[in-house]
Image (cartoon, rainbow, N blue to C red; front, side, top):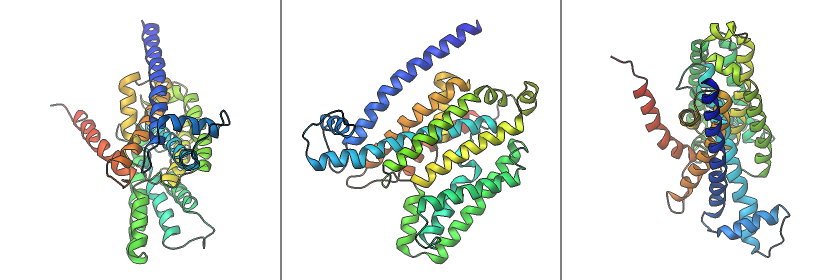
Length: 345
């Protein structure tokens, strides 16, 4: 009976992977085609194959440049960022045994925001430090504080969540203080736009870095999938099954911190992806992490590319911050989770 259940789960995962790969390919092609300057899908395909050196089609230089230099890298970064944030959400929900956990519960987003504000407004680094580097440093400062407060993330889920809340409050307060006391109106606007997330500034080097970080994180988490399954039963049961609870938890927290910090430092704080996608994937392939983690990656990629498309077409001649779009989807889903998790009379 158990073998039959596993087989059905693997079949569903296989079908999901095939369908998702097809949908993701179309979503990336569509995201590359639309914008202020709409380009046909045929031209997009030829521009991509030209860029890869597979063809030498004669295309207008401006269209080829828009596709290859601007939009394709943006769509691919969106896909990897969505995959990474969804993976982080699935891992944290298992480690913290909390269905409402997401990547920013550890205060990493707040720390990244403080680091970015220090570079934009205070000018820390005197021009030698990029905004992404400042955000990355701030994110790891927040992770270090949470690790310190939670005794290396070994004090249990509740203690870790409380440490994350405390870190978030501290770094959010620092960000607000710096913006209100040192920034002018233009700087405050730039900070606000970055905080809400944007793929406007990403290029090929960002994609190349994410292409290393996210697949490595996925592979490592799949390697520890059985340990993640054990965590859902509680620390004591996981330890009884032979799982080194403290060491595995610290390693997985560090993996989520690296992925989240890398993504946030590139595209800003994009919320709700890590909250929404794991629940949707769990509904399709079940709770076993060997299937859940790949499903989260592909669904997260599709979700983020689609959200980026919506952010560019929902208002004519304007790009809405990506965090606004994900929040408009995430908040209703968050409400549904709270409703379903309410105590039964």
